[in-house]
Length: 298
Image (tube, rainbow, N blue to C red; front, side):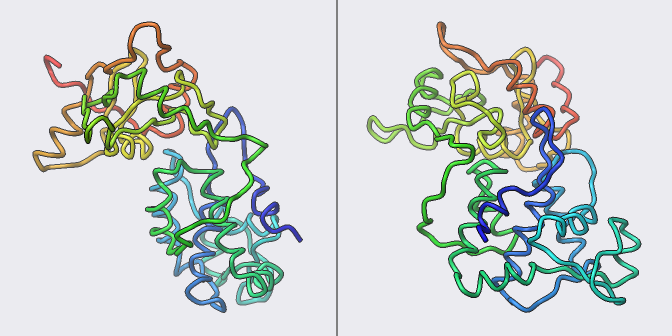
């Protein structure tokens, strides 16, 4: 059994680049719990709040329930569920899962494969991360799921034979004249820029191309906030700040809240700006609206 391929082919609702990371998040969480206790079952009522937090933090902006992946992941052959009455899931209803004492864990064949080949867990987890989330979120997502991965990962095949562009960062930083498009930060050590990154607008994992029109130069802080949906880009190329962001310190106000409505810096003339299709994808799939109102006079 090619478990890497099976975990990479989880059946999900897809269409027009819509994010549906419910099953990958549950599988990452299950792998983290397996690392700590290979024999432990995950009782739905005990892990429901953990899974809700994962979905709220890393899932789509619309409200959802962990009951859906808890039940439906069984059909992918990597997960099993039993209740107080015996094997099998009672369905995807929250009340049924709670009342029946439903508990899930990795399927017997997958557990056997992990015992035989322990590094397989690392490979599956990294594949799920690469295919469903941007690299800026991988470390904190591992921490949230309780995963401890090898410091030096084994190389994985790129999905659908795609390869990331090694030249994109240089092209994007040049297009934006080596400064953050949101705040203007332009730090260097000697001639080397530090803390500046090329951020995909439509995530690479969701068919976002390695092109300047699908990228923006951001400092490390604003790249992370952009990928978390705290920040976005409006149709007239201004910074959007999520109304759901809360920060009371002067730093939070100056570095985040005060950005609302600010025009992007760059790209320089002759370089393509962010394409409307990619900007719309980010607004619909990542940005955690509604948008914070622009201050009067802003």
